[in-house]
Length: 105
Image 1 (cartoon, one colour):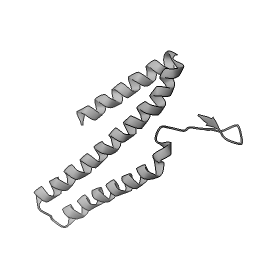
Image 2: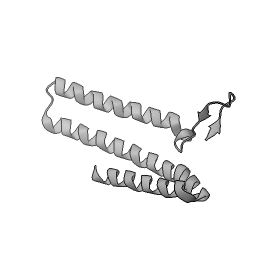
Image 3: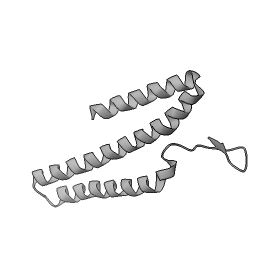
Image 4: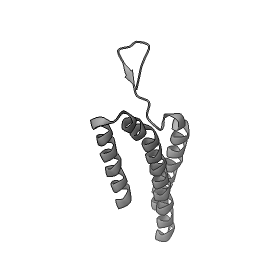
């Protein structure tokens, strides 16, 4: 966490900050895939073709989630564990819960 020039506002720097532009580009691509699904349904495209696109969109989101998780572990969790204490325990539990949610999808 860093303090801005005004020193009254805290600015958070999360693990994904270095790759934010890449992540946004990737999310816009996924958004386009989902819009494509809407068009496919609107155009009465064959079910299997739509399901194929759903699978591609799902895989893209899963891949994004894994990258974000990796960055979270390398930055946020690693930073907290280096400091130790309650925050470290909370970050590990939080990451474990996130991994559990990803595994259920």
